[in-house]
Length: 323
Length: 148
Image (cartoon, rainbow over all chains, first blue to last red; front, side):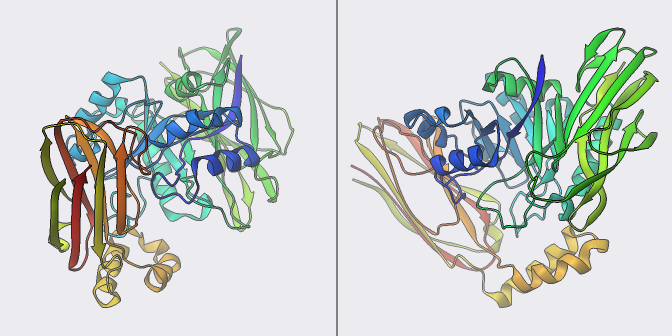
C-alpha cells in the first residue's frame, strides 16, 4: 500500500555552506514534521558519516545525497554512496556524467532551481547544461526556497517541467527547500510528498521518485484514489489508453505550514498537455472524476490562496501516463 | 613536509576554471593539511555594480524586474568564491563548498575537516583542485599543502 509522506530532498549542513551541524539539521527536520530527509550538501557526501557515528537515524530517517554544484548547473543526486568527480562537468557532457553516475549506483537525479539567477551572482544556479537525453533526469524542482510562490524563477521551472512532460518525458515534479538556515517567522516552506510502498527507507524513497509517485505542496494534503478496470493506479504509473478511469480526490487541510491561512479554490485536472477542467473545491470534499484515458498523461493541481498570493498553485502532482 | 606553498593572483578571466595542482607522495603520512586563503571575498561595490546590473538584465524577466531589481541592486553583494577539493588516485576525498576565504583543512584516517571524508594519507597521486566559481576583481590567494 502506498502512503504519501513528506520527505525533504534538498538540505545543507556545515559540511558545505549550511548553518547547521548535521545533528541540528536532523533535530530541526524532526521538529518541523518531516518523515525523513535527504542530505544534499554541495559537492560532498561527508555529512553522512556523522549520521552513522551519532546514530542520528534514531531521531529521523536520514538518506544519502549530494548536490553537484558545478559552474553550469546544480544537480541533486539522491541515494548515492560515492561522490564522483563533479569538476569534470562541462556544458556539453552532462549526459556522459549522468550515465557514469547511474552506472555505479541506483540513484535518482534532479535539476535544482533551473531558472535561478546564475553566474556570477550565484555560480551554476541557472541550469546551462545541454541535456540530450532527458530520460536520465528523474525530477525537476518546480518549487525551490521558502515562499516559493513569490520566487520568480519557480514559474519558469514549472514551465520547463511541463514542456518536458508534454514532450513525452516521464519526469516527476518536486519541491526543494534548499535548506541552509532557519526560516523567518513568515516563511512558508514547499513540501515534497513521496508515495512510499512499504517501509520508509532510502531504497523506497528513491524508488518513489523514480516511479514518479510524487506531488509537491505548499500545505494541503492529497487523498487520491485512481482506479482503472478495478486496479489501483498511482501517480507516475503508466496505463493504457481507452480505459475507464475513476478518480476520487480529496484535499485535506495542511498538517505542515498549518500556521498559514491556506484556502483551496480549484481542482485543476489536466487530461492532456493543453486541456484542463476546473472544479470548485473545499477542504474534505470528495471529488469524483471519470474519464476515458487518452494517450499522453493526466495530472492534478490544486489552486488557491496563501498569504498575498491569490489563485496560486498550492499542489502539483506528477502525472499518470497513458500509452 | 611542505608539498607546496604558493601564491596565486586571479581575476575575472579565471572565473569558471578549475586550477588542478597535482603532487605525488612516495610514502604514507598521518595527516594532510591544506591552508587556503583568498582576498577580497567581496568584490568592491564600484566594480560589482555593473556586473550585478548585467546579471539582473540577463536573469530577471522584464515583468518581474521592477519588483526584484531594486532588491538586488540595493542589497546584494558580489562575492568572490573559490573552493578546494582533494583527489587521491582518482578518488574524490571531498571538498568544502563554503564561502569562508580562510580555510584550514585537515585530512587523516581518524579525523577530517568539514566537507572531507576521513582518509588514509597513503602514498600515491594526489591533486588539490581550486575551483574558481566566481572572481570578479583582482584576488590574491595563497595555498599551502603539507603532510605530517
